[in-house]
Image (cartoon, rainbow, N blue to C red; front, top):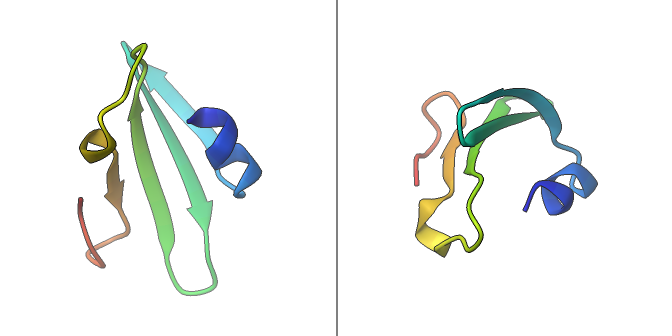
Length: 56
């Protein structure tokens, strides 16, 4: 997942425990993504915070 997001223009922000935080700046908003570092990821575990635009 980290490799896919990096190719999509996201950059590494930090790692805390078993989670990695990545960000991508767009012209009007900044996307923040938190990715759990587990063997398999459930598609619903990806958390995206874009400053009030939407949360998953």
